[in-house]
Length: 440
Image (cartoon, rainbow, N blue to C red; front, top):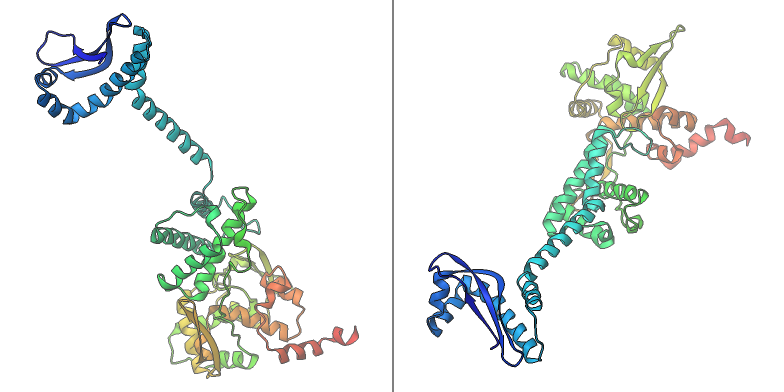
């Protein structure tokens, strides 16, 4: 071999630099060059005493690390010398530096590449980063809804729930999804998770999917992704109507006249609050929070209620019917407030006393499976029934649908249609009673 390794020290302990001795009679070469590596002097000298000692040292952790480079140095220089290359000290030094520092350079390059990747990743918007930023912006009020208003408390809650379940689903499947992963297969797997693992109803799962689609729509609009597979009509899942009832005029009269003298005082308050909801056709979040500041009494005695709807941010002005004025005056225009669940409990009981017992077919769902049952109508009365009842009775009375929209806050007749719960015969009779219909 033309290359061997030696220590240039008189010490018997401590660390010393290993030198490569390069010799070739044929090429007239004989010089020593620093390998840039050090070794424990005692261990090195012991390894040089016999072949067995050298073999043992080479197998040790320090020996393996050392000889992984020394062997390459030896083989590389020997190979070049055998080819007749008269390597200068500078050339040998360059070869040794390349070998010794190769791993260090590769590690440095790897770290540099990783840092660059992370920097690019930090700049690039990912799905998970986007949906969490979206949530934070909604909560802080930085992001507005489609109407240019701050999101309502209920909307914020459903958005946060959607994102929580999306995160939980990713943990469940052991995968982080990005924009390009969102397609019908993802939708089906996520939906199955909501049904089987979370035991969500059809409507709750549908709302979660709808919220995710809305977030993705914003991401597309803002240029973060071009994937629009979520816009496929099959992506969203259909809902089951669970709160579609309204009280007929006769049922509403029975509800108002029900003898609740033996019930707690909360029942009367709940009935009055509910009837305010009927006369205003508002959501419970609005009609259960009317205060004196929302009510204006004109010089002619007419009363106008100003409501800024929590869900949409829209302002509606509602002329109060005499029946509504009577309720407001009863409380000196300071309508009491009850928890929604309390109102639901009380008005169901009042409906039972009023014998609103018509059997109603109800679709229920669990885990995506729909079932039909029949229940007495009073059991279905809830706070939202007031809004549906008000809108439907206004329609059946022949009130102009545009005026109904002005009261309810719906931005289109199409949106209002969901709240008109009259059957086909009732609608036909309403059309016939419209004088304009007979003239056109």
